[in-house]
Image 1: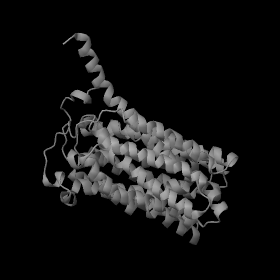
Image 2: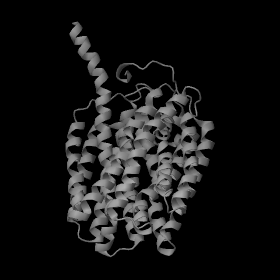
Image 3: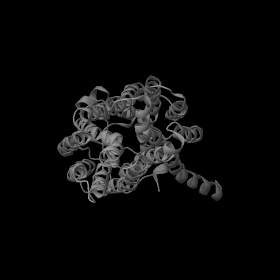
Image 4: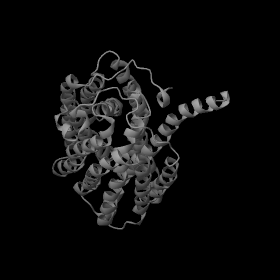
Length: 421
């Protein structure tokens, strides 16, 4: 074989996983931007359609409800058929529906559109992490997922900034035109990616708990990671929906300033914490098998005092406290997702993630925005934020308990093939 051909092959093997990671991270970023635009413009939606806070909160609950219900159907399909094709079709579907938001003229139309977007986005969030996990060795998954999940804070902030800047000047519908367009282009680019072999770098042996659907309910590593994530999702989901409104109505920021402030906090914290959490999880994994659980549990516990200060201090300490609380909330993103992925075998991983998504949303951010809206209507929005604080405490307790069940993945094995860096 000619030396030039060998060099081209090695270069291609190195570039393939990195290229796939970049494309899928970009699509994940857009996924979160599309859903967060609504949070940025919801005071304007509320005024135009004369809605209560409970009704506004229900938009997100309905979106996540359909998102949650779609996942169990998507997961088994992805474990049997082309993950790449399902991702492409789903991205086109949700981008088209995001575009259609500009043509909604009442609450019912907006509600239907938002629920259907949830179905489209479920196809990506259920499948893409398994695609990414199969590109790299186990001991790198915390860092790699840290890159992939940068999309959560960056995409969320992009949604807040896009809606917060454009809506006051051009109306609340206009940002959805801008948010929808890139999705079609990124969907097409996914078609050119090479799909990796399932489980090519996994080291753990298969057991009934790791390789079967029924076994998931007897898999304590999976269950504790999932339930801890559910409580975290309850907290984060409620905070994301209501924090701009809190700054706007309770702390008297302008709508643009509220979204700009919270958006900058999320993107700044998110970039640092996603990368730091992934790196810290991988670093500690060399020393203890429960590293991913420990980092996630500790981060939730450390965020509680800062969140309390953010709620009850209205002076100069408020914004730094929100930033500290957000940092710790987002620090667990990569290690906690890595814990879920490593808790099951590659051949049922998409199905397991579908189960995970169903549980974390039905117990997490499906009820929390509506519950917080109800408390806000009855008492105050400040009182409603006590619910996320409780969720953080519950998450931390579950994950500390889950440390004893963490699987002992290989961390000294040399990555080969596509996993080399």
